[in-house]
Length: 123
Image (cartoon, rainbow, N blue to C red; front, side, top):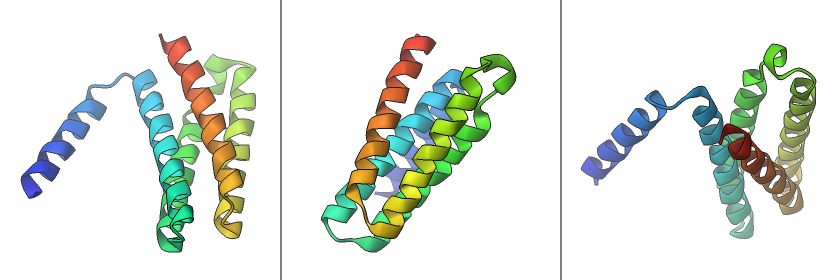
């Protein structure tokens, strides 16, 4: 088991280290989506500690994405993107406080749409 984990970590490290900035953004978005989906499953399973942990991970990723926005390059899109990240972050906070799967579903949809758009731009 340990050998598999070491191999997996090595693979992930190499993937991150060789990724372009655009690919890193895609990876972060995918990570946020994954953690939101895991939080949704944890709510269904009534596992509050896991729900809380996965939501916090998604929040951390969204903050990283927010801070990665280069407003100088992205012009008027930058502030709108920051507002979207702020909105998603607040939805995650509310989902965590109220154990609300609908708010998680909304963030999942928004982030999935954003990732799809990002991949088209990155293309």
